[in-house]
Length: 198
Image 1 (tube, rainbow, N blue to C red):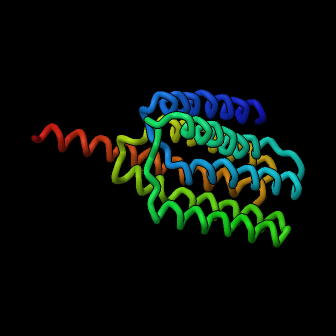
Image 2 (cartoon, helix red, strand yellow):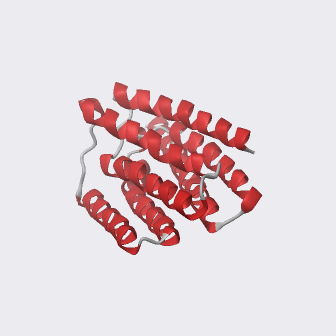
Protein backbone atom coordinates (compact mmCIF):
# COMPACT_ATOMS: atom_id res chain seq x y z
CA UNK A 1 0.00 0.00 0.00
CA UNK A 2 2.93 2.36 0.66
CA UNK A 3 3.78 2.29 -3.05
CA UNK A 4 0.35 3.69 -3.87
CA UNK A 5 0.85 6.45 -1.30
CA UNK A 6 4.28 7.24 -2.75
CA UNK A 7 2.70 7.49 -6.22
CA UNK A 8 0.10 9.85 -4.72
CA UNK A 9 2.85 11.96 -3.14
CA UNK A 10 4.71 12.09 -6.46
CA UNK A 11 1.46 13.11 -8.16
CA UNK A 12 1.07 15.87 -5.56
CA UNK A 13 4.57 17.13 -6.35
CA UNK A 14 4.00 17.08 -10.12
CA UNK A 15 0.55 18.73 -10.08
CA UNK A 16 1.60 21.11 -7.31
CA UNK A 17 4.72 22.10 -9.26
CA UNK A 18 2.57 23.09 -12.25
CA UNK A 19 0.51 25.36 -9.96
CA UNK A 20 3.73 26.63 -8.36
CA UNK A 21 5.19 27.53 -11.77
CA UNK A 22 1.89 29.25 -12.71
CA UNK A 23 2.19 31.28 -9.48
CA UNK A 24 5.78 32.25 -10.28
CA UNK A 25 4.68 33.28 -13.80
CA UNK A 26 1.70 35.24 -12.41
CA UNK A 27 -0.85 33.11 -14.29
CA UNK A 28 -2.70 32.35 -11.03
CA UNK A 29 -3.18 34.56 -7.98
CA UNK A 30 -3.36 32.42 -4.83
CA UNK A 31 -5.05 33.84 -1.75
CA UNK A 32 -2.16 34.20 0.70
CA UNK A 33 -4.29 33.67 3.82
CA UNK A 34 -5.62 30.38 2.48
CA UNK A 35 -2.31 29.05 1.22
CA UNK A 36 -0.39 29.91 4.40
CA UNK A 37 -2.96 28.20 6.59
CA UNK A 38 -3.20 25.29 4.13
CA UNK A 39 0.51 24.84 4.84
CA UNK A 40 0.16 25.02 8.64
CA UNK A 41 -3.01 22.97 9.31
CA UNK A 42 -1.92 19.71 7.62
CA UNK A 43 1.43 19.86 9.40
CA UNK A 44 -0.41 20.08 12.72
CA UNK A 45 -2.44 17.03 11.73
CA UNK A 46 0.76 15.16 10.75
CA UNK A 47 2.38 15.89 14.13
CA UNK A 48 -0.83 14.97 16.00
CA UNK A 49 -1.26 11.72 14.05
CA UNK A 50 2.35 10.67 14.70
CA UNK A 51 1.95 11.45 18.40
CA UNK A 52 -1.32 9.47 18.54
CA UNK A 53 -0.50 6.40 16.44
CA UNK A 54 3.11 6.69 15.29
CA UNK A 55 4.20 6.91 11.68
CA UNK A 56 1.68 5.65 9.14
CA UNK A 57 1.85 5.82 5.35
CA UNK A 58 -1.59 7.48 5.33
CA UNK A 59 -0.05 10.71 6.68
CA UNK A 60 2.25 11.21 3.68
CA UNK A 61 -0.55 12.75 1.52
CA UNK A 62 -1.44 14.99 4.49
CA UNK A 63 2.20 16.09 4.74
CA UNK A 64 2.25 16.85 1.01
CA UNK A 65 -0.99 18.83 1.47
CA UNK A 66 1.02 21.17 3.70
CA UNK A 67 4.38 21.13 1.95
CA UNK A 68 3.23 22.20 -1.54
CA UNK A 69 1.02 25.07 -0.26
CA UNK A 70 4.01 26.40 1.67
CA UNK A 71 6.00 26.55 -1.57
CA UNK A 72 3.08 28.27 -3.36
CA UNK A 73 2.70 30.77 -0.50
CA UNK A 74 6.41 31.63 -0.62
CA UNK A 75 6.32 31.98 -4.42
CA UNK A 76 3.31 34.32 -4.20
CA UNK A 77 5.31 36.68 -1.97
CA UNK A 78 7.94 37.27 -4.63
CA UNK A 79 5.80 37.90 -7.70
CA UNK A 80 3.61 41.01 -7.90
CA UNK A 81 1.67 39.40 -10.76
CA UNK A 82 0.59 36.66 -8.33
CA UNK A 83 -0.83 39.24 -5.92
CA UNK A 84 -4.42 38.87 -4.75
CA UNK A 85 -6.07 41.72 -2.84
CA UNK A 86 -7.16 40.51 0.59
CA UNK A 87 -10.46 41.68 2.04
CA UNK A 88 -12.33 41.50 5.36
CA UNK A 89 -13.54 37.92 4.70
CA UNK A 90 -9.94 36.76 4.17
CA UNK A 91 -8.73 38.30 7.42
CA UNK A 92 -11.72 37.06 9.44
CA UNK A 93 -11.23 33.51 8.16
CA UNK A 94 -7.53 33.76 8.92
CA UNK A 95 -8.20 34.91 12.50
CA UNK A 96 -10.75 32.15 13.13
CA UNK A 97 -8.40 29.55 11.64
CA UNK A 98 -5.53 30.73 13.85
CA UNK A 99 -7.89 30.66 16.86
CA UNK A 100 -8.65 26.99 16.07
CA UNK A 101 -4.90 26.27 16.03
CA UNK A 102 -4.50 27.99 19.43
CA UNK A 103 -7.34 25.91 20.90
CA UNK A 104 -5.59 22.75 19.70
CA UNK A 105 -2.35 23.84 21.32
CA UNK A 106 -4.09 24.48 24.64
CA UNK A 107 -5.89 21.10 24.66
CA UNK A 108 -2.80 18.97 23.90
CA UNK A 109 -5.10 16.14 22.74
CA UNK A 110 -4.14 14.45 19.43
CA UNK A 111 -7.74 13.74 18.36
CA UNK A 112 -8.81 17.33 19.13
CA UNK A 113 -5.69 18.50 17.29
CA UNK A 114 -6.83 16.70 14.15
CA UNK A 115 -10.40 18.02 14.50
CA UNK A 116 -9.21 21.60 14.96
CA UNK A 117 -6.62 21.33 12.19
CA UNK A 118 -9.41 20.21 9.82
CA UNK A 119 -11.63 23.03 11.09
CA UNK A 120 -8.81 25.54 10.68
CA UNK A 121 -8.03 24.28 7.17
CA UNK A 122 -11.71 24.37 6.16
CA UNK A 123 -12.14 27.94 7.43
CA UNK A 124 -8.94 28.96 5.65
CA UNK A 125 -10.42 27.47 2.44
CA UNK A 126 -13.44 29.80 2.44
CA UNK A 127 -11.63 32.76 0.78
CA UNK A 128 -10.32 30.52 -2.01
CA UNK A 129 -13.71 28.86 -2.50
CA UNK A 130 -15.22 32.36 -2.75
CA UNK A 131 -12.48 33.49 -5.15
CA UNK A 132 -12.79 30.34 -7.28
CA UNK A 133 -16.54 30.93 -7.64
CA UNK A 134 -16.43 34.63 -8.51
CA UNK A 135 -12.98 34.86 -10.14
CA UNK A 136 -12.26 31.37 -11.55
CA UNK A 137 -9.65 32.71 -13.97
CA UNK A 138 -7.44 33.53 -10.97
CA UNK A 139 -7.23 29.78 -10.26
CA UNK A 140 -6.04 26.60 -12.01
CA UNK A 141 -7.78 23.26 -11.38
CA UNK A 142 -4.61 21.19 -11.85
CA UNK A 143 -3.43 21.50 -8.24
CA UNK A 144 -6.77 20.26 -6.96
CA UNK A 145 -6.76 17.35 -9.42
CA UNK A 146 -3.48 16.22 -7.91
CA UNK A 147 -4.98 16.68 -4.44
CA UNK A 148 -7.91 14.41 -5.34
CA UNK A 149 -5.56 11.63 -6.42
CA UNK A 150 -3.16 12.09 -3.49
CA UNK A 151 -5.89 12.16 -0.82
CA UNK A 152 -7.51 9.06 -2.36
CA UNK A 153 -4.23 7.18 -1.90
CA UNK A 154 -4.17 8.34 1.73
CA UNK A 155 -7.68 6.99 2.29
CA UNK A 156 -6.76 3.66 0.70
CA UNK A 157 -3.64 3.45 2.88
CA UNK A 158 -5.72 4.17 5.99
CA UNK A 159 -8.02 1.19 5.27
CA UNK A 160 -5.27 -1.24 6.32
CA UNK A 161 -5.75 -0.12 9.95
CA UNK A 162 -8.65 2.31 9.91
CA UNK A 163 -8.80 4.96 12.63
CA UNK A 164 -9.98 8.53 13.00
CA UNK A 165 -6.37 9.71 13.26
CA UNK A 166 -5.26 8.17 9.97
CA UNK A 167 -8.42 8.60 7.87
CA UNK A 168 -10.07 11.89 8.83
CA UNK A 169 -7.72 14.42 7.20
CA UNK A 170 -7.37 12.48 3.91
CA UNK A 171 -11.19 12.24 3.68
CA UNK A 172 -11.51 15.96 4.32
CA UNK A 173 -8.83 16.70 1.70
CA UNK A 174 -10.66 14.57 -0.87
CA UNK A 175 -13.89 16.53 -0.31
CA UNK A 176 -12.12 19.91 -0.42
CA UNK A 177 -10.01 19.21 -3.51
CA UNK A 178 -12.94 17.70 -5.41
CA UNK A 179 -15.07 20.75 -4.58
CA UNK A 180 -12.41 23.25 -5.67
CA UNK A 181 -11.58 21.32 -8.84
CA UNK A 182 -15.23 21.18 -9.91
CA UNK A 183 -15.92 24.82 -9.02
CA UNK A 184 -12.94 26.10 -11.01
CA UNK A 185 -13.66 23.91 -14.05
CA UNK A 186 -17.39 24.66 -14.16
CA UNK A 187 -17.09 28.38 -13.45
CA UNK A 188 -14.38 28.81 -16.11
CA UNK A 189 -16.59 26.93 -18.55
CA UNK A 190 -19.59 29.11 -17.67
CA UNK A 191 -17.55 32.30 -18.17
CA UNK A 192 -16.24 31.05 -21.51
CA UNK A 193 -19.78 30.22 -22.69
CA UNK A 194 -21.02 33.66 -21.63
CA UNK A 195 -18.24 35.35 -23.61
CA UNK A 196 -19.13 33.32 -26.68
CA UNK A 197 -22.71 34.62 -26.50
CA UNK A 198 -21.57 38.24 -26.89
